[in-house]
Amino acid sequence: MESRAGVSKQDIREQIWDYMESQNLADFPRPVHHRIPNFKGASRAAEHFPRLQAFKMARTIKVNPDAPQKNVRFFVLNSQKTLLVPTPRLRTGLFNRITPPPGAAKDVLRKCATSQGVKNYSTPVGLDARVLVDLVVVGSVAVSEKGWRIGKGEGYADLEYAMMVSMGAVNQGTPVVTIVHDCQVVDIPDVLLEDHDLTVDYILTPTRVITTGCERPKPTGITWSKINCEMMEKIPILRSLRYREQQAGKDVTLQDEHRCFLQTRSQQTAPPSTVRRPRDPPQLESGSMGADDVPSSTVYIGNLPWDTRVSELKRALRELHTAPLRLTWRGPQRRAFLHYQDPASAQQAVSCLQGLRLGTNTLKVALARPQRAGDSAGSCAGQPHPDPDPTI
Image 1 (cartoon, rainbow, N blue to C red):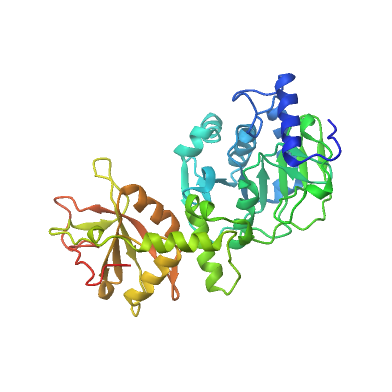
Image 2 (cartoon, helix red, strand yellow):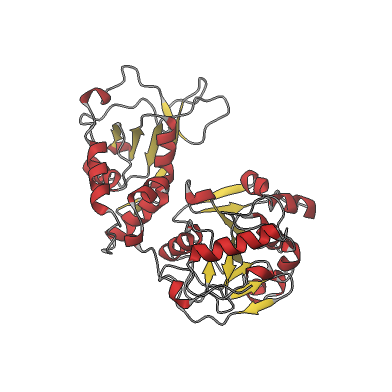
């Protein structure tokens, strides 16, 4: 297919989507509009993947979770390489590591490579996991033989890559592969590319392997001026990365910084009636919740440096926009409890605070749960005492 002169990215997307629908070139889900198309022939295109030298040399491979990359995920698992898959819309972190059952046969590995398998066999990877990604696979709506890429318009693949750069997981030499139908390879005008756009090094189609030889630099990190307040609210891990880069002295000014500041101030100025101390607070301990537990609205913070002051923790929470309604301070025991309005707010805080450092310590962060009857005395939380100055 050829793209028209003077077109926009959205024009090219619509052109590809309309053509694939009219020619019946895609499998479920349909219609393909606003999606990475699950094109017919995706399995044939994926067969080129394990033959790439970049694949043979890679140990850890990040693959997008879209349907046309299912066979690519299988090849990674079947080759006993580490498979990382981004979390949907980055809402609960950046990566999940897919861990099949020990000794899994090929049919089980194929299930692990499906969208349901990704959910069932995944383990979150924290910011401090020191992951090194050797090869990146992304979905595309359109690509050019030069290596220019257009996604579905939400920017997640570009942002995922930028976040990986910020984590130190990838560098300019990390190859990027995309897998598309032949009709998705089109001319893309150079003028449409922006600094934050991710380019590709290899394009795999059912009939071709295209080595783009692209020399355009890939994104060098998160462009904070392109990030707005709404994205910060939707993607908690962005707040953690922004805090880290701010601590490192980088410019992290957001697209709508003033609006974010006003929202933060309004969240911090809660009515006095919302700050209450429980009469009989439950015993709490850190850890994952059992099936019979009530969802917790309290977050456990552990591994605090011995000399940390409560004001330092409060400041970090404010800067990450995760200030709780109430804070229980256990400084001598090197832990604290954050009490939120509801379990959803607590879970979002856990996601945002993963990898948080105070001093040289990486804090342990988990949902707290009520201590069950019969648990051994002296468990890691015990009876909390409300902070004498609970307002953050």
